Structures are given as structure tokens and as C-alpha cells.
Image 1 (spheres, one colour):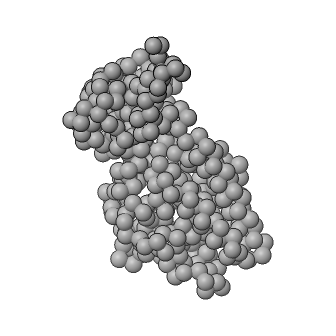
Image 2: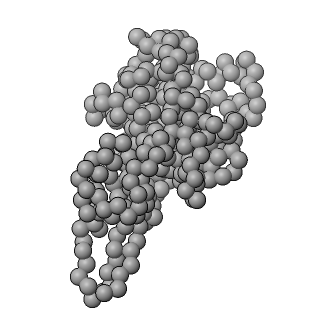
Image 3: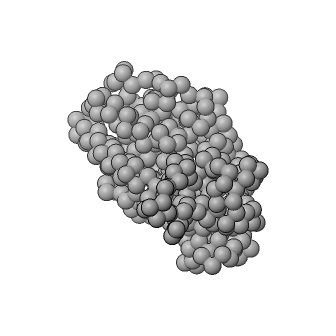
Length: 370
């Protein structure tokens, strides 16, 4: 009886005894756990789970047509490259529609000083769907192509990230989660009154220009005073999203005791997306450098660990296993990354060799590939 095989990706929580590894499994520090070809046992599966890995690749036999198929592995796993293709296409279409709705919302605010509540409800629903996959939804933000100006995409992205961070913290009710999204998509509407020449200036802002930009939270808060339907938590979240726990933020320099929880979440989401987004001003950096920055600010007392720690932890886990390009142009798979150290990571190349980036002066991760 003729047979062939294919390598497919399988969630570690869907592994079963008898599955055959199609690719060697490495621990977070880069040491080998199990070799390709290993027939998994309960003990070996437990070992994989203990290391916090998200998925492994297994070998699935493909029998000839006359042979009765064995459906067990197929029932538990998904194809490596084709995984969720239709789902991704659906996500991209939802995201594209959200961007267009966000653009309409901004146009109404800019030209008519009007909030369309039906449009906002639709936006919140769409963003909630995009964020429903949890931390895995960040992959969409890292790979999408931007079709509109930065502010439109940034507002949708912050809504998605705010929902994810809020859910990971476990302290927000369902209604509060919707308010988080609403605050996220509206957090920068005050910038609609800032000159585009200043907002998108390619270079250092003057003191007067910086002062004008830093008024955008207060401008939005004043705008909301005309719309009592906007929840107070959303209004204060938007007003304070640039405030920091240590009082170093703006526009009011309030501290942790006075800053609204929604504002604390928005601050993290805003910084992460602003640093990792493609835009006409500033420089896009890798998610890894952005996370280092957020963590450093958390240790400095600017961000609350109640919201930043769960987000950073989960983001670390979802980035391990992804492919990255180094500053010298080489591309490999990230097999370990310690967010307590700058560029303290291990990258595995196609020839199987593993590089400790921290031991290479001047070398760093330049960008996330896929």
C-alpha cells in the first residue's frame, strides 16, 4: 500500500498520544526537547505543554485512495500554510470596512461636528469581532497594508488593542469592554483640529507645535460635552490617555490614583501601535523594540503592571515561532526571546543553526516577517 505524508501545524492542546512529530521541538532557550519523527506519549505531550509552546508540527500520513483513511489527526489539527485562510480573508474584509467607517466618522466630525451613533455602534461591533481572537489578532496589525492615512488606521488599531489588553487584565465587564473599544476608536479625534502640517511634520516639532498637539485630549473632551450619550468612562479615558501613573503625562499631569482604568489601557495600546505602525512621519520599529519600551516605562512607573504585564506576556508567547529579519538582512525563526533584556533572543535559520543575537554586537531584530 503506497503512502506519502504532509507536515501540518497542530495546537499543543490538541496533541494526542501516537502523533508523530514532523519537526524537532525546541525549548525557549533553544535546546532540543524532542526530535522529528518522535511518536508522542502522554508524558512527552505534558513536557511540551510545560514549556508554554503554542503549537508544533506533526507528520500526517496520506494514504492511497483505496485505503481507508485515518481521520483522527485531521480532526485535531489544521494545515500549516492553509490554516484559517478564509478566516484571514474575512478578517481583512472586516478590517477594511472598519477603516472606511472610521474615515466616514472622522469626516462627519471634521466637517459637520457630528457624531453618528449608528456608525459608532457598527464600528464597535466590527472591532470587537476583530479582537475576538485575543492576542492572536495582533498578527493582523503586523501584516496588513494601510490604504488610508495613519490616523484612521491607528484609531481602529487602538480599539482592537484596547479590547485585547482589557480582556487580558480580566477586570472589565462586557459593557466596559465595549466602552474600551469606543474610547480606542475615538481617542485621537482631538487631532482633527490640529493642522495636518503639524500633525504629519517630518521632523522635530517646535515648542508651540508640540503644545498644540498635546491639547488634542482636552479638545476631544470638550467636544464630547455636546454628546451626553458618550459614557463618562469614555470621555475620561480619552482625556487621560496620555497621562501616566507617575504624573509625567499630559495635558493635566494626573497620576495613577486619578487616572481612569480605560485611560491606562489606552496609553499602552496607543504607544504600541504608534511605534509599530507604518506612517509618513517617525520610524516604524519592530514589535520587540516596542515591547521593550513599554516594559521599561512600566518599570519606571509610567504604565500600570495590572494591564501591561498580561499584555506583554501574551504578546511574547505569540511572537515566539514567528519569522523575523535581522538588521544584517538574514531571516530566521524566533525560538526564544527574553523581554527582560534588549534583543536577548535566539533565532534559528533554515540550516538548523541557532544564533544568540545578544552575543552579536550591533545586531538586532529589524522587523517581523510573518
